[in-house]
Amino acid sequence: MSVTESLLAFLLAASLLTVTPGVDTALVLRTAATEGSRQAARAALGISAGCLVWGVLVAVGLGALVAASDLAFTLLKWGGAVYLCWLGMNLLLRPRPVVLSEGDLSSTGTAWFAKGLLGNLLNPKIGVFYVSFLPQFVPAGFDATPYTFGLACLHVGLGLVWYTALILATRPLSDLLRRPKVSKTLDRMTGAVLLGFAVKLALTRR
Image (tube, rainbow, N blue to C red; front, side):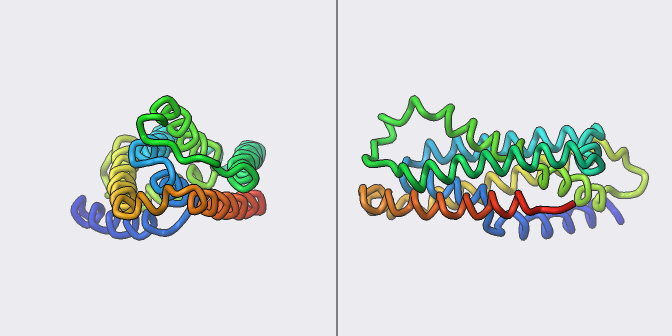
């Protein structure tokens, strides 16, 4: 497999995986709809940073530890499930009663970056996915470490494009989506989705 063939195959596969609905999509959509594009962008950057960390770990071989060690996988799995459960319960039971302007929300940007980051770092499925998925696209004769990390960066780039599209798609409906009743409904729906992903992650087997 040549470099061109490798990159084209990876772009196709990674693009399909990127647009498949998951925790990251739900988090970015909810944040964009109820708290504005800047907060959603910070959440997206946190998600991307988490993917980059996993990319580094997999490139240097530490990701294989998560894939091979039952203890490491289980600890991360339950940590991620508890974290998603905490996020989901907060949104479900304590939806935002008042939707603030983006200017009023500027101080919470770090919090949304952290939520996106932790959501990925505490998900061992991402590490296992990178360990099993990325090496398939390394052409023969190439150093796997830098090439694998390059593929992870490409995956992050695709994710950022997708999150940008999601954020822009909510802008025409921002006034409607930021109404208190609609915002509460979105919070509760997103909370239920995150709880579902928490259960799915907790029940994941190697």
